[in-house]
Amino acid sequence: MFTGIVEEVGTIRSATPSGLTIQAQKVLESMKPGDSIAVNGVCLTVTAVRSDSFYVDVMPETIRRSNLGRLRYGDMVNLERSLQVDARFGGHFVQGHVDGVGTIVSLSPEEKAVIVRVSIPAGVARYMVSKGFIAIDGVSLTVIDCDDFSLSVSLV
Image (cartoon, rainbow, N blue to C red):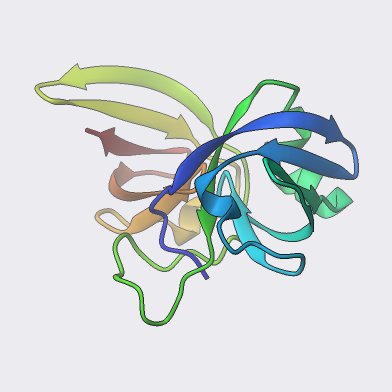
C-alpha cells in the first residue's frame, strides 16, 4: 500500500523485458530484498539491493498494463516505499495495481496550475468519479472532471 506521495525520482540504469535496475538514494535507506516499492505507481518487489541502486522483477502482465516496458537507460521514474503504519499519511491509498495507460491530450495553463487532460482506456471510465482520486505515474491527484473517454487533473 502506498500514498501517492513521491519520495524520490530515480534513474533507470538497466531495462530488460524481465526487470529494471534503478539508481536512487533516499529509498535505499533500510531497503532489502522482498520489500515493495512503487515505480511510477506500479507495485514491484525488490529482488536485489546495491549501494546506489536496486533491482526489481517485472512480469509480462505488468509490461502490458503499465508504461514500464517503455523505459530506457537514463529515464527518470517516481519512487515511493510502501506505507508504514506509524507514518504521516498524505495523498490517498494507492495499491499499485495499474488499470491502464492514458495519453496526455492537452495541457492548459491556469493561474498557478496546469490542467492536464488525459485520454483513458475503454472500460476504465466507469471507475472514475469527478472529485475522486487517481494515481498517475504514482502521483496522487484529484480528478477535476471525467467522461467516457478522458479525465482532467490539475498540477500545481
